[in-house]
Length: 364
Image 1 (cartoon, rainbow, N blue to C red):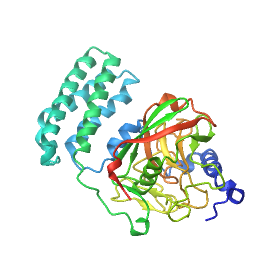
Image 2 (cartoon, helix red, strand yellow):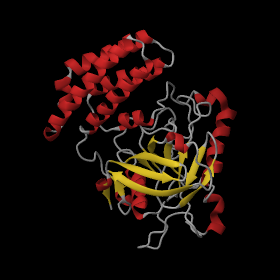
Image 3 (tube, one colour):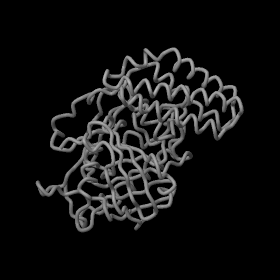
Image 4 (spheres, rainbow, N blue to C red):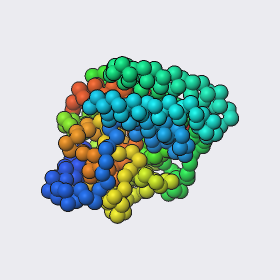
């Protein structure tokens, strides 16, 4: 792959423009006839909820507990208090009667901490029932958020080891075998990211490695479009991606998509080209601040250092109708600082990027 900016500018700084715009135009031109090929339903728009569901665990009671509390957000908007009360009651039954079944999935060394988490969850669910009875929306939101945060921690404690082996052809690339938290300081404020190596270990590993190298420090955003994308990662000088100082070559990262129900990601092919029209990725574009790898339109395996935040717009990405899914690798979400993300424009900068948690899970 050529790396000179003069020769591949249209595939470099503006890699996404033709690809994403083509998808939006396709959505408008084909209408509902093509949409019938895609999955339907209520898209999850909370990045932290997506990350909880993406954890590679199999424990039905804890998922039932999570589902009941996640569902409340859909009903709060319409003030459907009877439905909310039903969800809270379901959660209370699970946390009270299914403790032993939940704890079965937790390793022995983490049992004590898990039991404390369940106690805390039960306390918040009880408080949630009181707030629901009083129809106190802010308190319902607060207690629900606390309970779900504890559930996410509990579910994470159930993961034992990395669940699959990345193909050997990508063994020369860094891999993140778990999750990491990244703190960004920008010219408009601070942003926290969670990157998911369970669903995209090569892409997340490449990103964490570049953060550790200081690659993104003092780097400017090159593209910002309201309700669309915010892109960064084009280094100063002639190159459009990361040149490994050891090999002196462009580090290319493959398209990497974990499909719901699969045990490991697909590599080097879009979901469309794989004929998987009706299926959904584990990490979708349905959340504001989805973090995705930019790439040349014609080369699924040509990404490197450039990435973008997707600025979720419901009218452009309705539930189950997002034609970006499966075409670009989503590898994480903004988990704090969404308001800052909305203020950033082209020529604003990442002042510094730092791995604050999960750095030990990076495998060179």
